[in-house]
Length: 273
Image 1: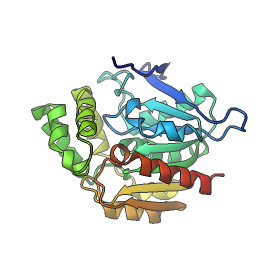
Image 2: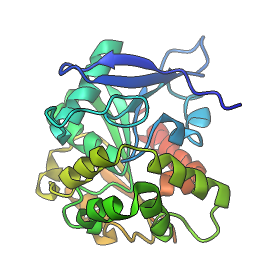
Image 3: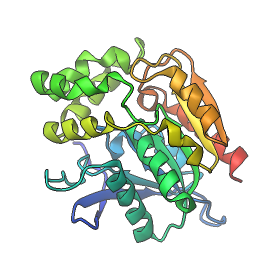
Image 4: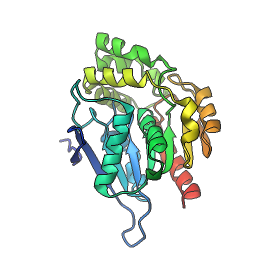
């Protein structure tokens, strides 16, 4: 029997129901630390943080938002907006709902796009920003071709066809199979809209607006984005540091959660104490 994590729900200001969860295993007698807000990748969900939350939530209360159209959050109609600005508003509305003034924002891939735009538009809400395999948009990548390919093949088959871009050769086959089934279960028309929008966006020339301490963790062997772009990000964001996971393809959050959490906790301990 598989038990589904209990989620709470918040109606966004445009009526779309958003799913969220708090995990907090910090010592209850200690002064609470600034919470962490987790923003997952495209086609992701809360459950994809399974390798992160057990360790992370021992140090910080951990808020997880399932982006609209993902997981248990509702899929917006075509008449409802699907933009980065709307995704940023969703994150702000969750923080407001929980009474959280600011958070350490952690974004995986497209979740990091939301985090970057959140740090620019609402700097007072972002105590620090940690980006994992997350460039400033997808405009300069191959992603623009994905919606048509996924529509022709089916989403799960499309994800299976690109496994080598996402996981190292020695990845657990069970993990890879579960990942393909999880991503393949998403609503295909919505994912097509989501990826098409992200593929139209690029804000490299705005990165100087990110004022908070920023961690950039990159796949050392990035086949989806551009490793050169990560290096430029580290120079363009005023207070940034770069960590590269050698030899890893794009999905470092799934394939190397221990290394990612270790880098994140080290960064938070050093830079935001």
